[in-house]
Image 1 (tube, rainbow, N blue to C red):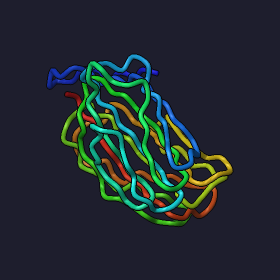
Image 2: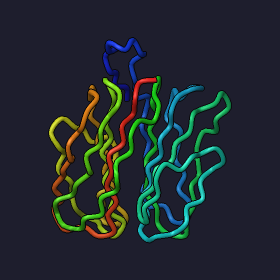
Image 3: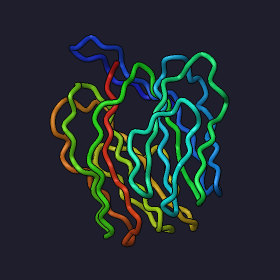
Image 4: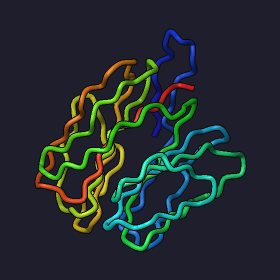
Length: 205
């Protein structure tokens, strides 16, 4: 999977999504396969959802961006000698996804929203760079067998919505310019529990 953002007035190179892989409902250890064509200098993001609140042990070199009970995000800049897969461990059931971006850096992370009704909100952020990518990440550690609506302008790129806890959905919007995004709202087909929702921007590098 590849998606490009047109080069903006800043003259920065366009951001590309190189690939996305996910692993669902792993017990104690979650293995995520590195997306094909990941190269040195690429930005890798891992989003994890846990069915119960446990300590996560990441592989060496991964940096924690946020950890809020049932959801966590890690990042890493790829080197020239990356393994084919990465193992994250916690004493519970884990689902997650790994996304590789090129010509990219971490932008702005929003405050975590933990609402438990059917209206799921990822709180607004103020993006600092034109032509950013915007990720909306919805995690529900205690819920299963439901769907999320996809907000206008977004595409769903990874999800776990099966009959086993935990569950998540990652949605992405391209060509987002600097400024406030507004809250990004998705409607679930039932009330959710153990929720962690956030927005994260990926800026051109």
